[in-house]
Image 1: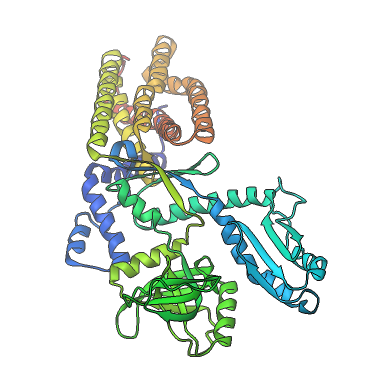
Image 2: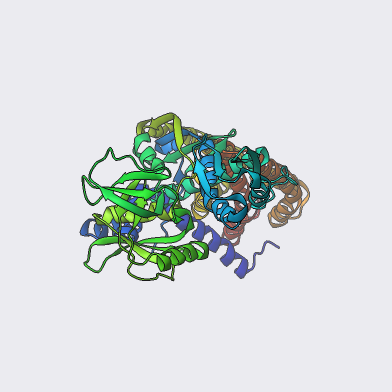
Length: 553
């Protein structure tokens, strides 16, 4: 009566072996981590003998997925940043000026000449020479407004346009400011995430807090200052028309112009128009490369909108210089030799390979839409993380030992079978965590400890049921079979309710709560699998070999 088909045995043991194979790299954590970091560095920067040696620390054919350690276990950097969302209002108004100018120039016979005047940040002020045409000017400027693209701002316009005397004032509406704040925060979070991920750090925590703050936690990074250097680099790339050059840093530019230093030529400054032709936000790709002289450079490509602007400008300004500006420094100011319709080009300068690679990473990630102020910064040393790991390891060993002793004393040989399944259960759990790339934190370790304690519940139910069946069943084989069959419903009910709780914690929780729910949920799956299938196949194999007339549970 006790029989498991061969194909089932192959599937069960195959899953066990597969889980243990994926869990194995965690037993050689530092070696595998060195191997993985070397592969990533080789892909980004090229091969060196040291990197090749690091890559050889672990076989390429073996699985190399690890359970990532959280900030509380690994150490790392913690930052709380405040995004200056009001800066975006000024940029929006600055970007509106060319559209407003072109719209009013089309009605020059009615509104006269158009000139931009100084105004408060976030406000666009335009003066017309014919005040009697104010009504027509307001109509033209208001035609540039579009509806606010949010549910809360439905029906509202994104611009508030007013006129007094000969001056038109343009501002963002309150509904558009709210929508802009939301977009700015989302964009900032995504850009920070891409910048942190691209340099190879593992499992960062990047979350919006409140209306204008972002929490950033990155395990494995050296210090908060290092993280600030990475995140705080704005990499704002613009292409500006060049008005002139000067060697005097105190040169006073005309309105709507600015003086920027040259990165390649110390002591030289470029006078450029403040409003760029194209910005880095319209870049779709940037990759490190080499120019025709073999010097490090960066290739870039615009999206269709940027390509059209870039192409139109180069077609109309052949023979004129234009400045490639990065973070208010002119890194290159080439002369336009011909029309560039493809929307792609190359940035050259005094780069080394590492600088060109980092610049490409920052450009691909995009420019931060607004300046960030760091309100809180902490560096968590690896020593503190190691203490947490040691404490978690002791807790796991104590729980593990207590369960093993209890099962051995309570159920004898069958308890030893359950102990073997418990060992396999922990291995399978780490294998699953490695495969999905989960991050292990202190609450996650608590989930593992709880899993160890709960893992034998199913075996206790089964063994107690077998004890009952031995009193009435005909022979030990039938008692074992009935024990598994009749305990199944209770096992499923108990574990489904716990799994539902873990799912709710994962759905509604965040950070440490999610870490606990993941390890708890996966632990339930592995413990049910080992209790129902692994211990049963071990007992069946033992029974087939020994053929006992009686058994004691």
